[in-house]
Image (cartoon, rainbow, N blue to C red; front, side, top):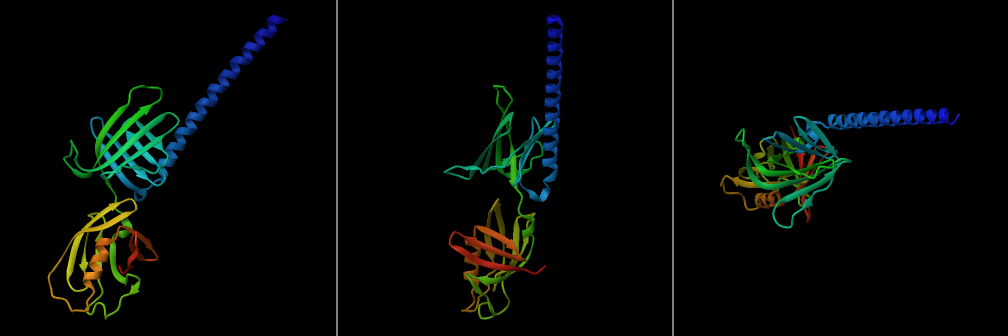
Length: 261
């Protein structure tokens, strides 16, 4: 009798092991499907930073929803996190992990040239990846860039300056306007008296108008072009809502533009 009981116990243990393996395999499949689903839900417009490297080829993309690291043979989705900022220089580090993988991603504002294409990017990127129980850390080097918010791509006319609605008394000819080309990170337009153009510096949550140059026409004494240009170049953050572009800095709102295109 004991013999048969032992046989039955062994069979039950075998069935339990098989069931556990099945559950583990199913769980792994579900996890992989979840990763694919998460990555597929992120659109190009939601990605605000991209980087690539060669030897071996790899890429990383960052959105509000996830951080995706890819090689020709693997795709790893990490949860989003706030970067650690260096005290000196424009350097950000993202430390992220999944159940089986740890990644440290460093983004440094330093000109970088792709070894294969020769394309120059404004950021140098380094990735340290540790998978499973492996003691070895894989290092990947490459170049990257922020993707300027596509919503900025439009023609904007000044509506408010330092909290006051602009009037003909401020700009007798016409109100300042600017045509922002997000893909090229440039802008051009009219500053209230002179023509202007310049470049955009964009990072996640940050927007600056830099390298601003204007023509040299003599302006009327009461024209507020100088005040407008100072406000434009002092702005560091932005918001877009109800067809309005609001530019601010830590002191408060500087300008509000209305979309006209």
